[in-house]
Length: 339
Image 1 (cartoon, rainbow, N blue to C red):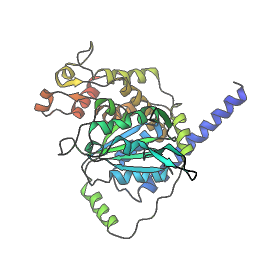
Image 2 (image 1 turned 120 degrees about the horizontal axis):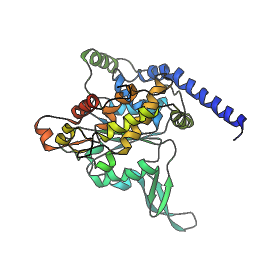
Image 3 (image 1 turned 180 degrees about the vertical axis):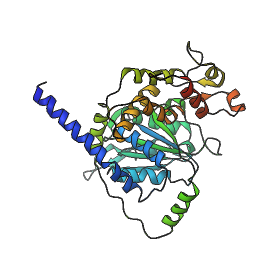
Image 4 (image 1 turned 135 degrees about the horizontal axis):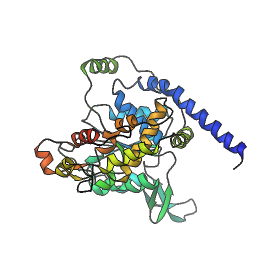
C-alpha cells in the first residue's frame, strides 16, 4: 500500500471521528424529542449501534423500550421493522417463506417472500413471549447476517441490528431465551422506572401537543463506516488483558476463579464477553471524545456485557444474589493494570 493511500485512509478516519464527536449533542437533542431521561440506557444502545452489536432491552411493559428503538432508527435513517412476538409466531413469520407464484403467461414457480427480518433495525418486541423454536430463527441472522430458506442463502442489508425487548422472566407467559442466543447479544440493558421528576415530564410531554418530528442525522453507509472507525480506537494490551481476566473470573471451577463465583455461579461468560467488552469500550471512548480506551470504559460496560452471560445457581437465588451482584464483586476482586 502506498503512502498516499495510507494518508488518505488516515484522513478519512479522522474525518469520521470528528463527525461522531461533533454529532453527539445533535443525537441527544433529536432523541430528547421522544425520550425523556434514561440517559444511561440511551448511551448503551448507541454504543452497541456504533460497535455493530445486537442489544437486549429488559424491563417491564410501558417503559418506552419500543419508542427508544424506533427513535434511534429514525436518527440514523435506517429501515425499521417491528415484530410483535407471540406464542403462536412461526419462524417463517420472521424470515419469510416461499409461495407458489404464477406469471402472466401461466408459468408457475416458487418465489421467496422476504419477512420483516430484511431491514436495518429489527425490533423483536417481547422476544421472550414466543417459544425457543421461533426465537432460534434469529440466530443465523444475528451471527451471519443472512437467512437460509429452502437451501438458498439470502444476505441481509447492511447495517443490520437486532434490538430485542423482553419482559422480566418471572412474569407469566414468558420463555427464557436459550444461552446460545443470549450470547449473541452484545448488551443486556436493564430499563427501569424513571425518577418522579422525569415521569412527570413524560406525562406532560405525551398528553400535550404533537411532538416535533425526529430529523435523521446519519445514513446506513455512515453507520457502516463508524463500525470500522470504532475498531481503530487504540487500546493497550494490559487493558485488553483486564477485560479477558474479568470475563474468565466469572467461570466457576477454573484455576484462578474467586471462591464466591464457585459458590454462586453455574455458568460463566465466554470469550465473546471479552470481545464485546473491548469493542464496546472502544465505541464508548470514541463517543465520549477520548483518544484511547482505559479501564474505566471496561468497568462501565461490565454489567450490560456480563449480566446475561452469568447463570447463578439455586444457592445464589436462595440468598438473593443476582448476576449484577456477582459482577459487582468481580469488579472489586479483579485488579486493573494500574493496581
